[in-house]
Length: 144
Image (cartoon, rainbow, N blue to C red; front, side):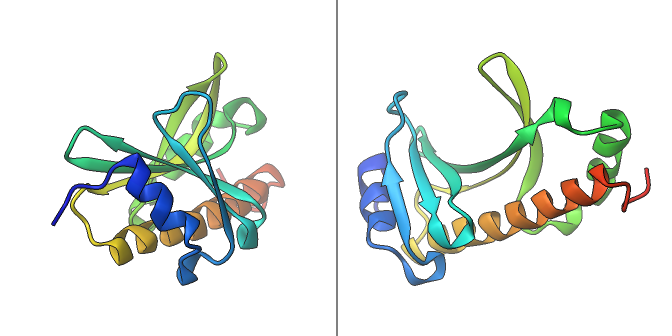
């Protein structure tokens, strides 16, 4: 099986794979990543890149960390429960000097096309669930 590249991944997602629905694919200024916008998930942006010849990395940025009240308690809750989020991990990334929460996952750069599409679909569903969870946290509906 051949190793995926950003070019072949762009073609894969540009074909609007059924599990993802209608998508737009773009290449941000950095050029080493593609942005897959899932229109049926509220225009959720999922970023995909290839790390060397071994891994495909997929991530969805959630929100700035500073927007989450009781951040330390929130992060503790996330660390205790993240194992219940299939094929995704929570993380913090820096964008423009600001910390943001993200969900991410990785898979082999030799994965089958349907596996890659499934990973992106699951990550997108998890990102929607995580955004809902954050809103519940902010409203105090989830205890610290």
